[in-house]
Image (tube, rainbow, N blue to C red):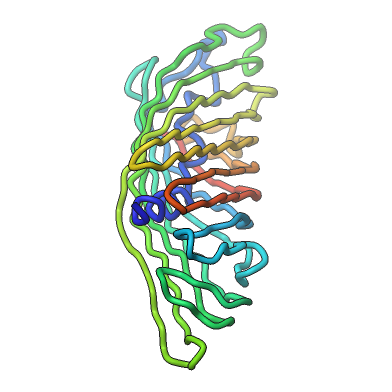
Length: 277
């Protein structure tokens, strides 16, 4: 089941979106939570460093993604759209495309082909998430308008990923070699999403997502967390609300089975600009 392992490696290289959804950063009159702004659109970026190790089959070479390939930090951009269905539930759709490209500094065996050092390796992923969130707890009233509001949501989502992994170069006799893999795969996940208001126009929020997969002889454990501060830039406007979102995100997963093994880590700062209307 080598293809199943590669599917998980590639699909999980780019994890779920920054957060499943947000209730409302601004309470209405008398400290009541405001659900009038039911739709938000965000353009987000993530400057991430890639680390970890990958080996395909027992005969394959273990590739250190930080030291064995000249992958640099990547600036990735995507979007998410959220829509509040009720005071208890909401939906989110998010999309992002990711790619890494670099040269291997050592000879490697990939897909039963042995490449000399300096072979080119690329990882490309495009994906979208569809997630549903359900409110578990929230603060309906606050001691002072604009302060101490809180929400906690549970999340369930499915990630649909289209992934490509390829290596090209020459063998020991300088004959041209190419190897690659491409496939789409859905993955379910569970998570928590929370936020609290610390001043009139500033919120702190965070989320944690977990994927546990056991299929075809493979065990995979994946987690994705982020911490963010969201600041409203037009507090006096009664129309569309605009926010700047700064944060940090970390992703890790472990996969092992039938000779395949991978540990993938992504981490780095995030920046988003979004509107609620």
